Length: 272
Length: 303
Image (cartoon, rainbow over the protein chains, first blue to last red):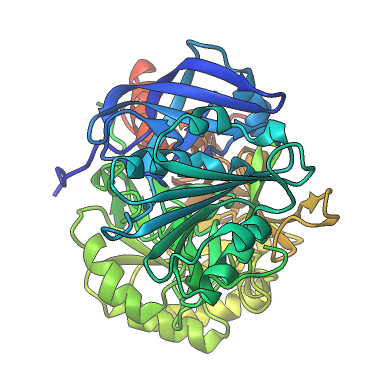
């Protein structure tokens, strides 16, 4: 049995091809892979690991933000905000630097049934996994609506790229009112979303309280709702049980059973 | 190629490298990443009679040179392990060591007995040292008397090679290890993760849902080395060294202070190929120095 089939999964030594600073805190990295990987479904993630530095030993999970093709993907884009040591080190990497990549991991967003309206709700960095979903759904005839919220105008990092896309209707909310409607994106959603009825699928990613509000909204209107969750991870492949989330079916692994879950499956906690 | 074979009592290993319990799931999670048959053995996640939900999240937190975990022994329970996990592991050639635990000596005994009846299980490793559960675990490994008592009960329940995994968080690790040996264990694993804590300063709350957790990774290697070095001259049974092994040099250091085999934990998360790289690195190290048998490394520390 020594030759039991093994896929091409495993850490690959990628290379930073492009590094773009978006505002003061955000970065977009393009990592080229030594051999193409795939298939990739929007919503999946990668573990990124840089050379041992600063006492950091664990790789970090990041949503796959953009990629070319589907089956044979030669590069991956990642969007991140500097929040701690790991992202701080990542932000300092220069073009040409090596970086270890384990991808694709986890499940992805399921497509809406034909004819269904797709309602996407992004909060801040939550745009990262929704962006490739938008690009994918754009090719289908489903009507596409995006509610994009952030603290301030500068935090609407993907807006310049989204605003020129055809066939998508975008509603903006910022907490400080510097762009779009002042307030939370979920409040805007309640005001603006016309009753698409049962034929609507919701996709959301963002901070915990936003996701909870989206889940409540979806439950009230009896709509199918898929959310992307983020947790601290160690292995990324389902072995360590470090990234679990409480669901109606017990603890589930965000890395292996997710990161995409049906909103109604999650048991929402205030401190989650 | 130098000989890497070692023996843990009756259990023969093609090389001395295996995963540490709880860091490798039930093997299937890593099977698409590495060839399991290249390992000396596989050690499963800790199994208990009934399924365990584990501790509330957050469950992991990275610290300087290490990580804290508070998984709390979440596992599928014996029945599902036998039905759904063991058949997959049995497809491979490497020996399967099942790590297990209970909340009472009766549960330890029953678990050991039921695991012994299964085809494909090569050895058992009793966890007497998990820092992450309120009852059981560390409580059973806290002193020589309790270790002797629980080991005696488990020993009577299984004919399989029996390994006990002990904690360094005791006043005298030598006494605890000798107590286990006195009850007829075949090998001793040293050490488990170390009870520890981290704070989320922004929220002024414990970083872990379980408040405290177990520290693992490079930060604990010196502690584990000392434990193995202290125990090795005092027991005749082989020792499996565990704690912060990140590469083949770390692994060989454990052999030099007296371990016969090693378990790799946190490093699997950093790089799933670590164990294979350790096996390759050990072979190359010995070859370069003209050492034909890895057993020459064991307990070779000069003082």
